[in-house]
Amino acid sequence: MNEQKILSNRIRYYCRIRKMSFYALSYRSTVPLNTIMHIINCSTKNPGVFTIAKICNGLDITISELFGSEEFNNLEFEIE
Image (cartoon, rainbow, N blue to C red):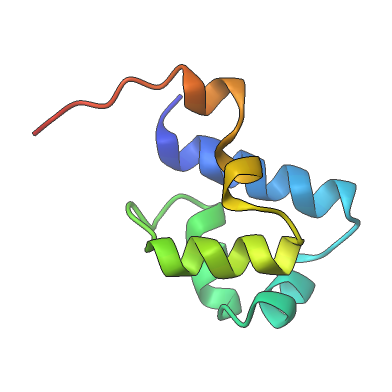
């Protein structure tokens, strides 16, 4: 599984457990809904760190919580 799909799954997970729609996440995080949807459908290959931080804020989690999963821990990145 690639890193974009893992990120999408993690955001979906936190929205689901918080019973929050992507629209509500957009509102709470001040990240445009279009940007969130591009991250969710993996068409954004490299979302910025400030965008991710805002999303975490909207989800009321830390960046460490978002990325602190087994899937991210097991990723091996290729250096291009």
